[in-house]
Image (cartoon, rainbow, N blue to C red; front, side, top):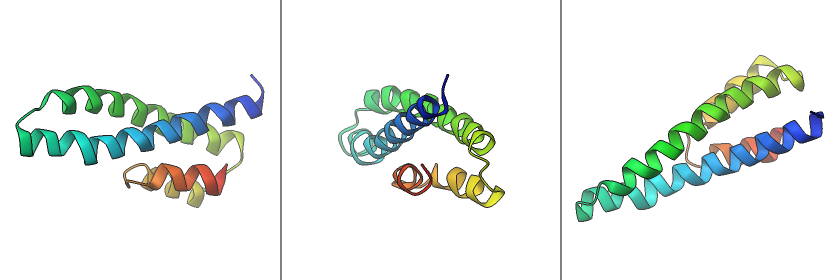
Length: 94
């Protein structure tokens, strides 16, 4: 697989992970706690968990492939737990 394809895949994962985190925080969690409907948290939470793991693996792959510094890798990983962090990584480092 070419490097451009790998970067495109990581970009897609980054955006999807960011969206899933926002949906979890802004839609699913309020439904769970304000309307007593935990089903969406289970569904969105699972999707977000899978995307989070793929994001971390992708960040490690980009670290190796793009010769990121350790600082860049740490920033990318920290951004994975911030609501708009993956979008920042996608724009700044890719």
